[in-house]
Length: 418
Image 1 (cartoon, one colour):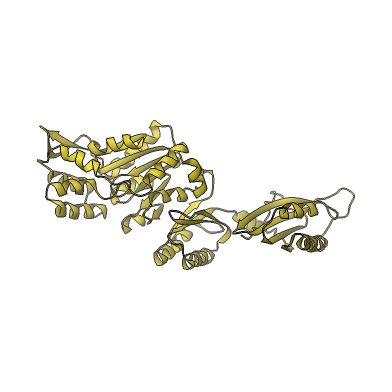
Image 2 (cartoon, one colour):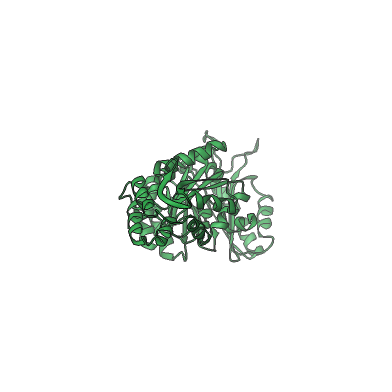
């Protein structure tokens, strides 16, 4: 991993002294880092450590250190040439002693490059992540004036994911270019601004149908009424944004008239959670998140027991009307539609005293869009193209716990939390 050789400069750069970047590479072994810093502390110009980054990849070490000359009262200033000459001799000695390579070069002090900072994380997820995906992302970043400052692996299971720290690129241009790479390579690529807000999320809301669970609850109910094909067509049109959701919901619920209420228990018992759902919820709960679900095509008779079994903090859904032990084909109470899902998210956040910018929403359909855009981070999960284009980011992996990598958690952190 190459070190960004740009030191963090004070506002007044008029007193900048000579600076240099030392890059150590080679087989990792105990004592290499200690040997380098011991040499820096020895004879020659007094220096201060301005920046350090180190990574070991499969036993190979890359260590970068930026140093600057410390002014000493009464002593003549040490210029860059003298510093580089001294560090060159030091590097030769350390390399021979530690069996590594040590390169020395000037460190830039360009204020414009300092100002670029590290404004975005770019997360690549796939099973597998191919060289074409990484190369395509790198080219896209460069095309919009971005620079990759660092790369680290977040996970190797259930998906492989890497986080690139990128500076110097505008968010909109970066997302646009990377979306094209994602479409061409089949790799998920998410973009998030660097900052405390990313790791300060405290509440997550999951859609139910085709997000928390596989399939659509209302389709399962319709199958038991012998109307599966008809309802599936209406559901698809609604999820693609082709029909008003409230109207489509009423049409679908109407075909359930006459079903015995026991069918609800049967459907609930046969629900299959999306792979990774339990891991996602359990991990976030251990990390202090408030977790809940909002369903529109799912119904309280099914979602409330599901939320209880998962230990969720809240749940909202539509309620089927039941009279004399049978479904009437109607609904009772407020309709949880596209706008209702967003209102539910805002209500849950307010009840727990959590700002909306610290919330996460995950969903797959057009009726989730208001909720996804209301949240601080909206994730389209295996969503329709119409939804992917409008969400903050999209995941097309079959594993719901891949959301953890979008939030910046590594596989080791997940295992520690579980």
